[in-house]
Length: 121
Length: 109
Image 1 (spheres, rainbow over the protein chains, first blue to last red):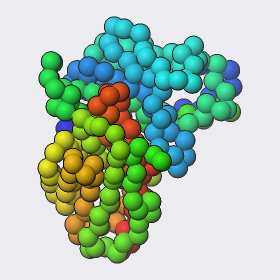
Image 2 (cartoon, rainbow over the protein chains, first blue to last red):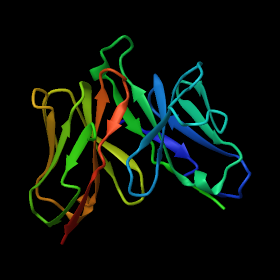
Image 3 (spheres, rainbow over the protein chains, first blue to last red):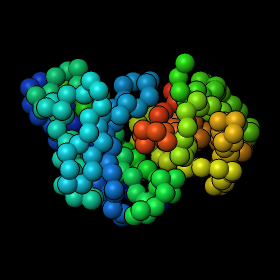
């Protein structure tokens, strides 16, 4: 099946530094990529949706200047947490949607990355 | 009331038992996903359904669009099936996934 990778899987950083997380679709071109955040024992929360070559669409309450998303190609999206603080510590998961060009929405599917655990000290 | 409800929230079983996890939703959907999340955190997509039934190994997923309900069944459960199972629906209106809160399954030998 399709594979989505994330790098790094674990990152510990000092407060005030910036952290970049990469998300790659390894064997398919993703029409859209999604970034989620998950707190312990809670469900995934959508942060933003990104399409290759265009600006990301952020969900309400998510600071776009704090969580910078760059969707450089159909196989790579990056999330940069700028000036990280302890409250940004979380599990960040990316997801890539694939499907037939011009196809019906139900023919697309979404694959999830393994996640990146961020700890800000 | 959540748009996607799962039951039960927690489930324990003995190895070999047949397991059913239920998902009900209240929005119009294009598709429904069943996902598996192990303690390490990574999420695996098990099924995507828009109608009927799908089977993969010991896993079976069904969906009834009229009743807005889906079930995930695990036959001959095994300790390695222990994980959180998440139902997520792709909203027809917003084109975004809406997640259930998950069902935590523990299978004991």
